[in-house]
Image 1 (cartoon, helix red, strand yellow):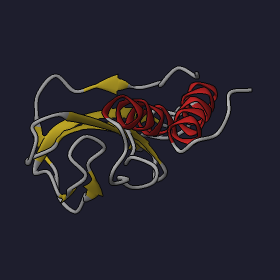
Image 2: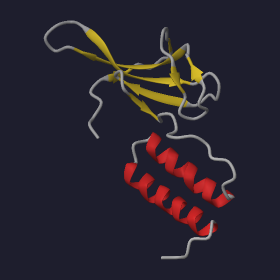
Image 3: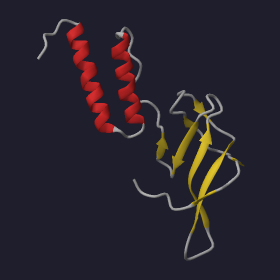
Image 4: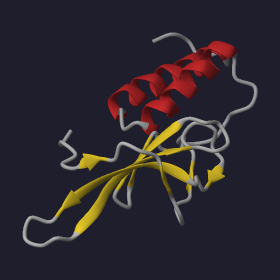
Length: 127
């Protein structure tokens, strides 16, 4: 992971126009306050925002946004599945959470284990 080269503000500031789907509660929210990380262009006096830490107004948890395309945690991959056994549902949701924080290798193992458990519960033989 690369270093975020900038300086975080020490006070909460007002935010306008930022909306996203919260990676924790899944709601589409537009927080009004947060922290900003700025960087100064070395060749001019222009200061630009490189990241922000926003608080979801619904669940009160922090979301990190970097640029236009990086959000941590991101929204959960996939959707809920009805009628899973409790331990399989827990593992399936863990795999979805792994994807939301870019832990793809862990998510593959958890999804494969979930699939194996569902197959055996539906009558597949082991191995």
